[in-house]
Amino acid sequence: MQAGWAAISALARRLRRIVGRDGLLSTPSELAVYECDGYTLDRHRPDLVVFPRSTAEVVEIVRLCRQYRVPVLARGAGTSLAGGCTPVGGGVLVCLTRMNRILQIDRRNRMAVVEPGVLNVQLARALEGTGLHFAPDPSSQTASTLGGNVATNAGGPHTLKYGVTGNHVLGLEVVLADGSVRQLGP
Image (cartoon, rainbow, N blue to C red):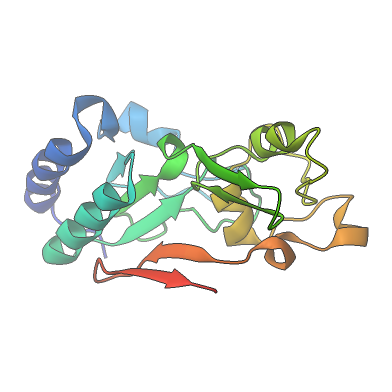
């Protein structure tokens, strides 16, 4: 069930304080872009779209939405055909594309630490010449985010030999529905 206009309007004002003026979309024309992923036959408009730049901002967003009893859904680039980022119940779509830094490439331990908005192809290019590679290479590799790859367990031609995304994830930092942060993995 979608929240009322007054609640969404109040929530939008508070979210704007977190993500800034350019980090929140609320007009029908802006929201139309986020009604679906690559599967365009199933459309559901979010009430708001926010673009956090850090885990701390995601925590604040989730806590505010919980306070207002408004659903929250994460989104990468929206290239999937699975419908996983389609806001069926309205609510706030948290678009993670601005969290787009490669934080570390550790050749010795054969791993990378990345934010969810890093494009698949950006990691592939960053790994060139290191002796490492990230095998999942979906056809949307130039546009899909690693967070979206994790959410959909993305594959691609190289995964026949090396496995899908889940086979390459050692750990995750996640924000739960109550706004708490958990580290999953070793």
